[in-house]
Each structure stands twice: as C-alpha cells, then as structure tokens.
Image (cartoon, rainbow, N blue to C red; front, side, top):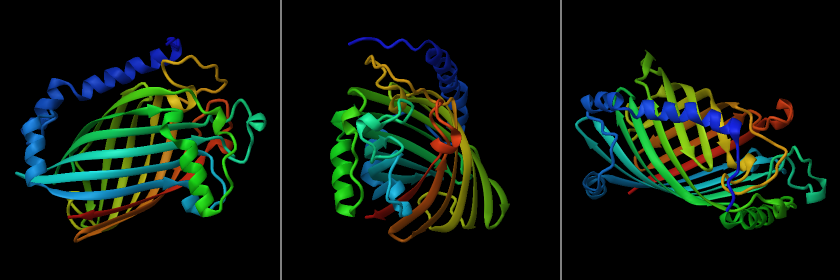
Length: 325
C-alpha cells in the first residue's frame, strides 16, 4: 500500500482539524453540559434511549433522476436507510441513528464510453457505509451531533450493479464507464455538527445558522448553512410540523476521495477539488402522527477545479419518508 503525497491538501486539512478540535474543546463541552447536553457517547446512555425511546425508520433518497431527467452525472445517487431512536429528557431530545448508505458518483454524462471521457470529467466512484450518530436538541433549536461512518470506497460499494439495474428498471440509458471507477479502499469518516439557537422572526418564521465538520480518508471538509423556515414550525424534530425551508451555504474542501481517489492508494488523476463549494436547497417538510415526509430540490456548485462552473454545477432532488412505531 503506497502513501499518496498531497502537500497542498495536507495544508488545507490542518485548519479544518483545528476547527474540529475547537468546536469539540472542553469549553464547548462545558457550555453544552450547562444546557443538559452531552457530547460523549456512553453505552448506558445508548441503552436507556434504546429501551425507553420512540423508534422510527426513514428511507432517504437523493437522485437527479427524480427531476424527471433521462441523464445522470456527478453526484448521481444517494440511498440511505436510517433507524432512529429518540428520547425526550428534561427538555432535551436525544437521538441515536444507525444508517446504511450508498452514494454514487459518475462522469457528467453516463452515456460516454471510457475512451470518450475527458480527463477533466468527474471520476466514477461509490461509497458504501454503515454509520452511527448521536444528536441532542433543545427547544431553542440549539443542537449538537457527532457520528462515525465506516465503509468501503470503490468497486466494493456496488455502484455499477445498483445504477445499471435501476436504470433498466426505469428504462433509462445505461452507464458505460464504471470500468474506470476509482481504486478500492476502506474508509472512516468522523462527523461533528452544531446548530445555533434559532432566531424567531415571527410566530410562523425563524432563522438558524448551522456548522459541520467531517474528518476522514474519504471526506475532510467544513461547512456552514443559513436556514430559514416558514409555516407550522416545530421546536423539536419529534414534534408535528408543516413548513417550507430554504437553505443557503457552502463548504471548504480539504479532501474528497470521489474526485481525488482513495487517500492511501496511488492514482494519477488530472482533476482536483474546488476548495469552496456552494449549495442551496428549497424544501417542504410534513410531519404528523406516525408519518414524516420531506421533499427538496438541491443546487450544488461545481466541485472540480478544472471544470467550468457552468458545466460542473449540478441539480438533484431529495425525498425522505419516515414512520414511527
């Protein structure tokens, strides 16, 4: 196994690691504990939530085909099955989530054969993983979450099989260049996120700032989003709601294996990631009784430095259906 030198990438990773350590510092933890929040994971806490909390299953699908297009490109598919257990204690909602996810990335046009691909196009890549996450939220909207994802990057993720069979089912063009997929590697990604208390603009509207950091050999980045909601709002994620949401933000990228290739596998590629990627989302959420529904359209900026922004920008849709039991 050879080590891939990435001098500039390392310089970018260092400030993101510092940011991750800062938001997980003892002072931040002490502030969280004053509000009944805990940034630690203990087996006893996990077991209490599992034994006393309310469970739900959530199917989360992200795909550009949901926009009724007959082509695919870039981040082409994300399929995630979540099992959540939530428990409300002293005004703090604690949730533990297990996730099985598969994310697929392709060239800008899946109909292109390997010999037709530009060296500056997005590489083919797949990421199949299992994740565990803990979230804690107060009625003010302040929230902490941290988690870990472990999985396999590359051919072992089953990207070619999934996309080929789905497109046959939907009578869509079949992908032609999965043979060029990036090399295989086991991956680990740690995640930490913080949501500031919401600013209430009216009884029907609020505004919130959220920040997140990921560190790992598949993704290392940091981002922030400004989120506006309007409608029948909920203070806690477990409460009934019906609202429109608009999100605007972006992330600083230190490492993106879906563009640069596996971190510990030597691979010569002509593309590199843009260091800042903007993103916008317009969504609607409905949650009542046992059911939850979420639908949104996402516009993500160009992720490849060597590609024109107009060519690299991408649109995809997200649908999430959940049921409590």
